[in-house]
Image 1 (cartoon, rainbow, N blue to C red):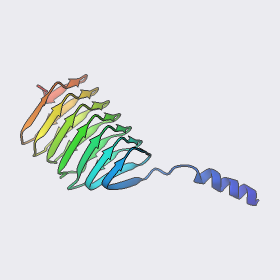
Image 2: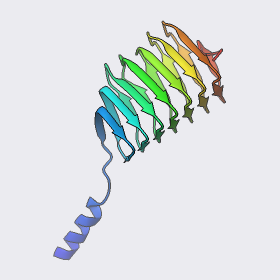
Image 3: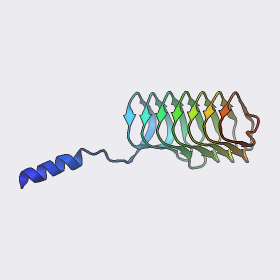
Image 4: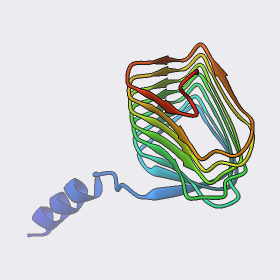
Length: 158
């Protein structure tokens, strides 16, 4: 009986739990099997992320050379996003934030930018889904983006 309980515990305890971790600082060169919540300043570099990245109010994030097997989304009022050379398997949704700079990224899903109030720059990205930009109130620019889906509203010329 003890052996059976011990084997059951070893078997059940060996599974990774899927929870969220908070990032306030930097995480580099590892594989993460959880969602990442960004509350303040966060730098993610060289990661394989099996989860979503969720930006909280006031968040600033820098993403470089990551493979993200999930979505990236904001929960309003983020400060700044810089993303360079990332492979994102899901959707990217930034709404009601400020400064956004996306360059040299591959996005398998849609890129949605809505009601942002700061500078937005999109350059040299590959987007398999749609590029949707609406109700952004500040300076937007973009060039050399390859979009397989539709480009709509403010992003038609990008």
